[in-house]
Image (tube, rainbow, N blue to C red; front, side, top):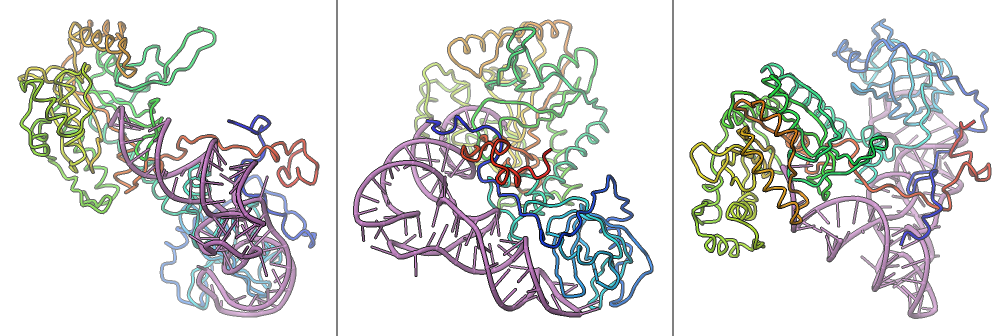
Length: 521
RNA sequence: GCGCCUCUAGCUCAAUGGCAGAGCAACGGACUCUUAAUCCGCAGGUUCUGGGUUCGAAUCCCAGGGGGCGCACCA
């Protein structure tokens, strides 16, 4: 199957553009040395802010040094107009043979080159704010092209694999990731302002736990034991509540060995938070306040449009039980007292593939997921799940067979999962053992008995509310992204394959090797 | 994993069984106020790979690879 791939090792990646020919080899232009630092005195945005209304054809007497990438270059004989892009924006560079040192070198610059330029801030005759370049220095050559200056880069594969090119060429991409960064930062501040302490717990687990998911397995050589990449943060954080950290949170990467989709990446970022003395009602308050706060600060409004549909994030969000919502959307009044035969009929009527081992709780969850969840837009808190499918949540205080658990559905997707936490070690042992049986019966996502966690519970976990929020999905929501890969800088992809016949440039003939490693020595 | 779609120059895209092209970028040149500057010139290809059908394949068929979407699983 992998025919012809055996010899592929390192070197040229398939599809990678060839390195650009060295410019102007005929001119014998001396290659300027690249400095080790550059003294920038202003960003392009600062220059704009300082001179909002400069009249056409006038100068300011103010000399600045700006730095960034050359975005456009319009040569016009003895003068030239460049456009410099930096992380704050763009600004025109006005160069001329009469006042710009090494003007010939300036017009030989290539789009994408990094340069620093020094000169007076002026407005050209047509009124464009510019730096009238007196001196400039090359800071890095762009040996590869960024592509079409108008269309940018649209090939998704190229955007994900070469994110740096996407970030440079596509402004929307840059904005999305800046928004994500601010979102994470604001989330930290929001939690800290409410007395939550941020911690970091292990990524390598000796037992997988905290969520129903297949883990990645890795191996520690010295200990000669398998370790699991965490599928959740939950069990360690609740241990910390046992230890007296009454409000604790972690924003961390978790790993699930499952399928990829526009909404699933094998590694993703969760916020998990645990609050002693709180129940799941208070966690609902926390979730809706956090999301509304982020929308307000980042977007200036809680009234969003996502995928063309309106979405109002202002609290309070609707709170409804799973059974109420099933009744609304499947037209069937069902609960745990409904006879099993009746539930199977409802399931069959909605094309739910039923397995014989399922109890009523699992049946109800499947019916919900098939009939109701896809129809929800939200935001809505879906409350009170069957205990059968919730091994870490505490029994409902008044409804037998249910637990105090909710999932907020926002823009048609589950955004989080939260409980009044199960804190009875005996009960926890029973649910672990039930999970363990399911696992032995072949359910690879079922949990195992975690004796260390049970020991922690035996020291006493106070009443605690806990929540886990999928931060990637939250970033999608706030940025309007339809695919999780648009909010993850380097999403998981199959490895790019080298072309065997070009795969070993370091061993190849010099005239082939040199363009690939022009500076290798 | 299964199904559907897709892959052509560095980038964005044409060519629907009959000579592989355009714009931008790059390269050479002209131009002293441009705004995706304009103009002239030059170059650029394993049409993802391998087979097959055909007088002739980017195009049709088979297999493989990458990507996208859907299903399944999950958040």
